[in-house]
Length: 267
Length: 267
Image (cartoon, rainbow over the protein chains, first blue to last red):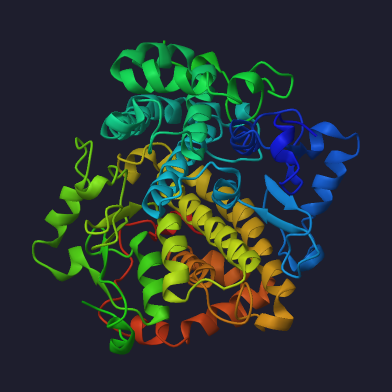
């Protein structure tokens, strides 16, 4: 079990994250929400020797039904919550990163109470996750299960468009959201005056992009002063996040969604 | 104003869909949820001469703030609900297709009451929308704003992988979900025993794929008997959907997400 806040732990269910071991990946969006909330969770594949077998069993590509009447899972990450299933005793097992975030948000204090704000947080997290997906496609524009080297020419074309057209479109959008909320959020929060899962999700995408495209990001920083100057630095120092980033639980980027290929970055 | 059910109309807010005119696109996922629910809505850009100007004004790419404290919009579709904003009098304005669907679902009867079932519906709708996005990328694998003809070679490679690897992965998944719920849903519903926005969303993706890749779909029908034999035909006959598909409100596919290019289809 990881995460701080033994205090909250006693009143929370035992949340279990099911994801691939050894990489941040899409699991990181779930981890950051828990860590910022100070809510304990189990990162099954990274914490137990047999953990990844459990994860793979839950994603069996031949299964039609999972314990407790949960439908089968398309892809990790998934979240298992013992005792929260439909019958009140089986585990609840859900998947899709934004679905897990919008489920957890109100329960762990990472979604604003106001309905309108909560909807805006969800839209912004979904948009940051779209940028995450487009980042993945820069190194895998043709076939997700083939090697990068087999689609390198297409990747060069895709990454160029991504850097020149998509990055400024997304960053301009988030800069304007931060600007629109500046009186309340001081450039530190996308919605309202405290951290939400939209903030942790966008932060992780920006952090991953800084790893994958360091030259492009360095060249663009000044164009988006709130996003890089205020938001990025501030979320990094948030209670829970700061401790997490310094811990062993924070895994290094490698061959996941955020990959650094020098030839795909700005020259 | 479109949609049937004048009865429900009186007790529902005036929902306004903001989307491009003339194409089904991502707006269709919202339309189908309303139509299956029998809840009236206004399709602003298709119904008023000045409608598209209103849509474009709401998506102003330079704006930082929108009426009523709503953040700016990244891309259509968006939903406007007069009087539902944070202050109780301004409009609520939200975007991101899955965000709009999960917001509307419980209000218009397209989400199951049970929390576990509602979460499963949301995950399945998100997964169908991922398939929608991958379909778009078959004709635009490099640059969303450039012409197909400028990325045709990459599109041929992408569409081949999509047909040979992604389509069977997604369809096998949804077939197994239908199988797992067969005792309750009779192959007609993904979750539970009545239609949800997961069903209308998956149906639209399958329908769009039948338009875009007719040979591939015809060749695969027998592999997925519940999905094609039961689910697809049954949703098409659902109350609300049947009438909608026969109406002028149902727009033909053309140059949107679902496009038919013979060279991208199976030979």
